[in-house]
Image (cartoon, rainbow, N blue to C red):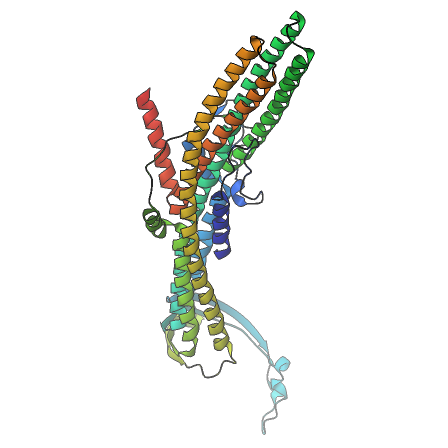
Amino acid sequence: MIAKRFALTGALALLSAPFAFGQSTLPSNPLQPQSSYTGSVPAGKPTPEVIKLSFIDALERGLKQNLGALLATNGIEAAQGEKWKKLGDVLPNLTTDTTETAEQVNLAQTGFTKISVPGFSFSSVNPIVGPFGYFDTRAYLSVPLFNLNAWNSARSAEQSVRASQHSYKDARELVILVVGYNYLQTISAASRVETVEAQVKTAEALSNQAADQLKAGTSPAIDSLRARVEFQTRQQQLISARNDYEKQRIAFARTIGLPPGQAFELTEKIPYDPQPPVTVDEALQRAYTMRADYLSAESQMHAAELARRAASAEYYPTLSFDGNYGVGGPMPDRTHGSFEVMGSLKVPIFQGGKTHGDVLQADSNLANSRAQLANLKSQIDQDVRDALFDVQSATDQVTVARSNLDLASQTLDQARDRFSAGVTDNIEVVQAQDALAAANESLISSLFNYNVARISLARSEGIAETGVMQYLKGRADATKDGN
């Protein structure tokens, strides 16, 4: 469970890393391909109709079908099973046993007839005894009255259950992060396809314009060739963008458990809704209270402390009560009651170093748990600060990217007008097209990074599931009101 907690923290650290703005390629998925959170258990079979998925729909599906969340659920059951095993050592045990026996004995087989007794000969005795039978039914009760080792072991197992429950909540937080990331990746890839399609149309129009001017003798052949190269370059980019988009759709469907081959459509565009700034102190206070992985680490440390007490308690005596009561006789209808009561006090004197070894192991586990908790607290501080920096940086980048896109659009319009008027060749047009493409990519990347930073901030504060859901529902309500 501890290794799992740090795997989740590592994935969060990757998501919280500084984003690269203005790149022309799709941002790489920070989660390793072998991570259970990139997989799922598909629900049902593919249907002919196209499923429409909003952001909230995708998150709800992911919370139900994502493999990471399902495995975390199994972890709770395993911890509860271990707890009940430990409770069996501190709770009374009551069992019953009913027997009906039929038996025949050969005294010669046991050597009894060879015994020499003065004045008596066994040769005249029939060595076959029986058949005979007897019946017995009895209830056995065992009550541990004093056993500090078993009691502390049971309490330690209870803390482990709490740690598993917190780990499950943390797993749901990470599912929100993964599904949100992939949803944003998918709609960003769709936006890139739309942008490149528009660029292809523009490049085609400019190529046709250059070809017409070449025929009219108002433009040299180099302008037509340059425009043709630009058009085909945009076509190549469109092929690549569509390929990236389809692959991203498959990866997204895997994270939320859609049946393989199921047709679906994402209903949302890249959202942008600037939120009031959050101070570092507010975010950290919320994180130390709400972060499920931190609460899980605390429970694991408490479990290690109780396990240490349980190991030390092996030096102490144990006191138990055992008894039974039942009826027995040669036949079920000819029985008589009988009972046995016994109190047992066991005092450990020498156990060959076993207790000392258990204490040393428990000390080591406790020291590790405390060190991991301290490290995680420091990691949370880093996560929160990194996420706040990313949100602010992404907000500024969106503002600049929007302004840059507007300027690049104006530059392309003016370059086309100058080329049409014969004032300049189409080098300016091609350069303006490249600048506009870069501006579009920068805006898409900035919006994507802003939303990922928002989700990462909620994750670092331990409120990803509630915070992201409320944010999305608020946007949906605002959209309805606006309509």
